[in-house]
Structures are given as structure tokens and as C-alpha cells.
Image (cartoon, rainbow, N blue to C red; front, side, top):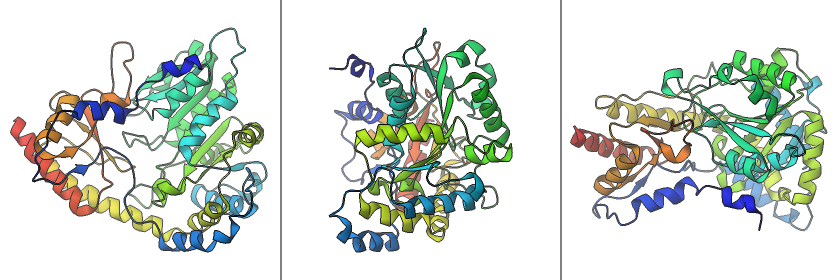
Length: 401
């Protein structure tokens, strides 16, 4: 077996299951899970209709590169959403459909990491993080380097604190904006500074933007990496790759549909890798995806649902604990008054509500775990369940006091 498999940590939800084992919650209370970021809003009916209507396409093998019509619909969305120019965006070179961002974020490291170097290459990633980044680094033969995102810096990375010798060994930088689990958003200046750094030290930026459409100010959507590149005249997108998905944007996690876009040379090699990898989207999923990327009304409605849930939950919790609206995403990154694992365990035991300890989403880094003292709450349940969960959490917090 590949020895690097032994370096993989248990997934956060395995740890959560172990934490809850042997605990019997009140049977009279319905379980409300806030631990998994799985959208629960209904899939758009017109996307379902497109999927069903494409069943006659099941007798053909799909191209790894995807249908030109799908790549064009993605390009149209990128131009509309991130103000990219049609001149700088070639659907033959700059866009590649993928089977959701999780699959692509993991596979990408396998394709771009060069282990034939004097020193073990580094893959930089936020801490706390989406654990796929770490696993991808290990199985690509690289070492993870964790950069912390803490309350003291509004949960944003301090890239200036990273030394040149680290950047010199960096081959791949994962960024996540809006962030999971914090909801923090990187601004244009930060992204452009990273692009300049990537040119200087020749590493690739992999920007995980799968929460980019879950924001709360219609006049200030989160900026994207390619948008920042475009605005600084970096129109070949060299060393820049973005990852997007329909899972959160369109409530279609089961469709497993997304795309990567950016540097044409990098994507040409990633396409070569994926041709062997065997991960082409089924034709039915591609046709359904064309419909989803072409419509914004259902996305606006989705944001409205999350705004309602955040307002209701924060109105209940803010009188008893310091909790703020995130810049984006559907997570509350809650500071806990006691140890985050004990908080999650006792909350489940007394209120039958499941949240995820923040330390399960992060690593000890120089003796400090930035996820400690936090829990992640995903407001994915229906509004009435989110309100019920908030009231139970409020009651639990009051019992601690």
C-alpha cells in the first residue's frame, strides 16, 4: 500500500462520531444536525427537469473536457459574475468541468506537485481548513504548511508573516474565500499581492471559491482570484486556478458538478491527468449543469433563505454569547465558553443538537490550535429547525452560566 495513506488523519466526522459515542440524548427532542455543510434547500425544479430530459444521452461516453455548451455556459457566468472579459477567456483553454470541487481540489495536487526537488515541496493551506487540502498534499508527496486564521486578525491569513524560505519551497497555495469554517473573505489587494508572490516564487494558487455565492450584500459579492488578476492586467491568469461548484450555489451537492478555470498551461496538463483519472461528468449532469449556470434567480432566492436563517439565529443567540454575522458562507464560527469538544458533547447530550468542534478542522501549529475554543454550526436545516436549534443552544449556554 502507498505508505502516505498512513499519514492521513481521521476525517472530522469520524472524530465527532467517537465523541458522541455512548452519549444518549433526550429522546423527546428531535435531533437537529448543524455539523455537516450539506445544503438542504430544494434543488431547482428546472435543473431536475433538464436532468430527466437528458436521459437519452446515457448511451454515449462523455468527454473529460466536457461539452462545449457547458464550458460556454461557465464562461458566460464567469464574465457576468466576476467581470472577466470574453477576450481573455477561451473555453478551449481556460475552463475544465470537474466532478465537484472536492474531487478536483484533491486531484489537482497530484497533477501539479513536482517531488524531484532537493527539498520536499510545501503545500500551503489555511488553518483551520477543508481537510482535503491536507490529504492532497500528503498523497502528492509534499508537506503541508499551515497558516493560521485567528480572531485577532478577523480570521484572515497574515501572508506577510510567511518567510521567503517557505515561499521558495511552496509549489501550491490553497486559499479558501469565503472561508470554511470562518466565512472570512479575502480582498482584492490580498489576492493581487498573492498573484505577485506566485510570479516571484513560481507556485500555483488554487482558490477554493465554492462558497462565493453565499453572501449577504447584493452590492458587494466576494471578489474572485481571476477577477483580481484581470483587474491588475494579469489576463493570461498564469499560476492562477479557481474552483467552483453547483453544490452550495444551486443546492445540488448530489449532482457532483463544478469546474476549474485559469492558467491554460496548467489546465492542459490537468486535463491530461484527468483523461487517465476517469472522472468525466455524465452527459445528463452536464446538461443539467448548463441549466444551473445559466440562471441567477434561484441563487438570489437561496441567499434570501440564508439571510433569514442568520437573522433569526443571531437574534436568539446574541443576548447570551458573542456571535457575529460572517462575511459570507452558511457557517457560524462560534467561540465557546468552555472547551469546544466538551461544548459539543454536552450540547448533544442535553439538547440533541450536533455541532462540530473547531479543533477537528485544524492542526496544532507551533503549539497552538486555531480551531480550539470554537464550534462550527452549518445553518443548512430549514428555518424552523434552525430557530429551534438556536433556542436549545441558548438554553444550554444559559445553563453553563
